[in-house]
Image (tube, rainbow, N blue to C red; front, side, top):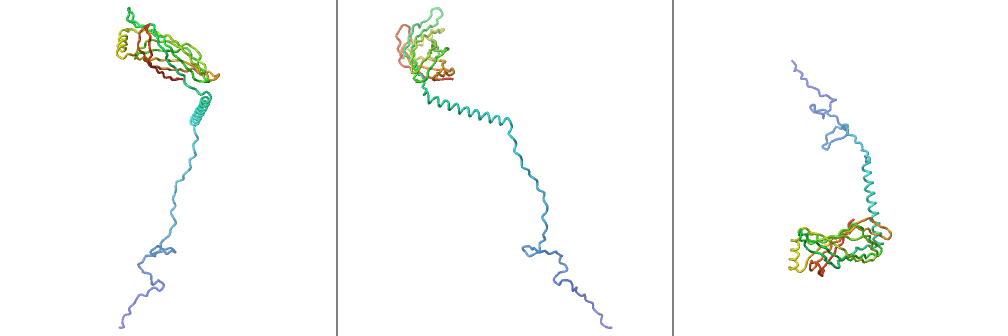
Length: 254
């Protein structure tokens, strides 16, 4: 017998000799990765972004606008008042009045044998000076003048109504009177202090309503407050009383 013919598979001529039968098929494209391998390109996925709408500015409320107008008007009023006060100051050049206590006379200062009350009657001389060239002072009614020893009121009185003109000096002699209940202890304290120190400190307070006159303009009523400290050598009736020292402070209250 003839040798059996061996059949060998004939390789496919159309197949590419470089392609491995086990290699996966891949669609090549024109772009490649950095390593030389082909990279597939796909269109980017579609993303839904939120739509942001711009907010319209809110209108200011009526209350806010009213508040702004009120504050603006107040500031404008303050500025106008400041300008007016500055002009008046430059025109009139105001100066504070001055006061001094010139003398103190005691006409009565004794104990009552009935109820041990202490009666006091003083005559005090006060000098009021108005140093202003263009400002007058109307002293109105309702004033109050008191004399104190420590916390005890000895006597009181008032200043009469009068007008004090420009650069005027007025001397006032004012009667003061008072009565202190159970005055035995107070009189004993005064006598002891007079013997130990040779002087007695007193305080004089004045509360006076006034009106200021600027040229022909009469301003609203205000109050003068005067506080004086004085030291006398004695407090006894029918004796010459010497004022050793005195000083007064002036305050203006609207």
